[in-house]
Amino acid sequence: MNKNKTYKNFILIISFFLILTLVTNAGKGVFAYNISMDKTHGMSINKAFLYALKYNKMLKLEKIKLIAAGYNENEARSGFFPKIDFNEIYMNTDNPLYAFGNILNQRLLTNQNIQSYFSPNFLNNPGIIHNYESEFSVEQPLFMGGKIYFGYKRAKLNMQSVKKGLNETKQKILYDVAKAYYSVILAKHYVKLMESMVKTAKAYKTIANNMFKAGQVVSSDVLRAEVELAAMKEKLASAKKNYKLAKYFLNISIGIPINSNHKLTSGLKRIPYGKPLSIASLQKIAFKMRPDYKALLLNKKNMGLGVKEAEGKFLPKLVAGYDYFSNGQSIHPDDSYSYALTVMLHFNIFSGLYDYNNLQKSKSKYNTMIEYKGLLRNKVEMQVRKAYLQYKTDLMNTKVAKLAALNAKETLKITTNRYRGGITTLINLDRTLDEYKAAKVNYINTLFRLNIDKYYIKLVTGTLN
View 1 (spheres, rainbow, N blue to C red):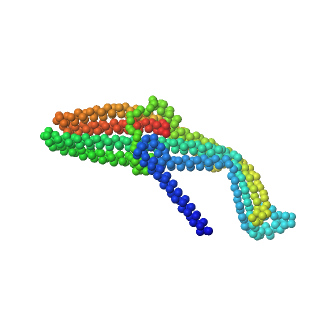
View 2: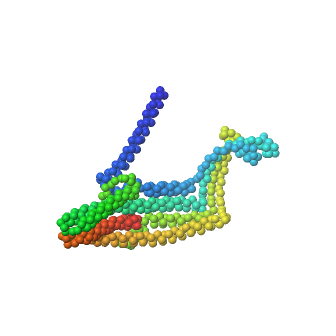
View 3: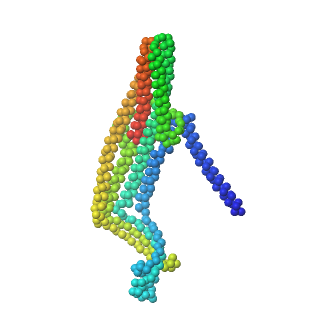
């Protein structure tokens, strides 16, 4: 019977671990499937943001700090509640003072034995006295000069400040993800551009070969075309390497496995911010929404409460306590019970100037926060101004760069036809090709900066959510 029961228990345990393994592997499979689905269905910038908010490791660390701040708030709140303790004490002593005290606590004195207990022989040599004491105590602070109240308020403000810090970290992470996301797209554009440059260089080599065979150009043109093709191939290899590194960095920024592959669906587009902008309106939004500025205001208020808390140390403290005792020669068959109710009013007359210096230090911290507030306001104003001007500049530059790229493309066509007709040299054609490549690269870069500028405006105004 015992063997059957043991066998059944063994089967249940094995089944439990098998089910647990299947569920764990299934959970991993779901994550891998979701990431692999991005290669098929695509990953937009918003989807990248969602992944980052879920998997970014720096964000997880900040959330742990928030949990710790919550524990500090609970710890400060506990000061309002009474402290309840229970002690069980056994004493075995021949110390005259303790021995006689235990006799009194056990209430063993009677009219019959009072002479023997008060005799010099017993008081000097009481022998071994046993005492079992149970103590139940309650202590309730009534007024602590504001220490408990302000301590709780400060812990609560600190909790709110840490939340703002978490929000600030979120926005910085999202901005980093946006830069990494569009860097991948930018790197892919570079690859496509260099692929077209390689294709063009191959065509120029073919043209140079044909014209050399027809006796229209010298052999140096063929050699130059081969060198240009080799250079373009080298730049293409470099572009592919940078594209792969950009994808790795995007995965790290999001917090997903580094080898995850995606089909990015949000492209580089010349789309305005979406609503009229002005420096004054953006600064107003920033002072209202910036989490670091709001956290500083909370910390300033916290330092102000710190001054009040330091001032409270000069006030009296009032504490009430209640103790209930039981004492006996053995473990509680015939205990003697007693209680003590105490109310203590404490005055701190002089503390060696410790409290005075603590108050001055608290005032200094508060004044420091006032100065930090002014510095941060200037920083926010400057960041908003820079973001606005950079956006306006890049918005104009993209239009100019696009026209320049179209013009360079048309010039390249004309120069190519001229080379075929023997009107110009291969050197001039190569120079025109380089100018087209530079114009195209400049246009792609301005598009990249314009897209990042919009996220930077949201970052410096505290609205990147």
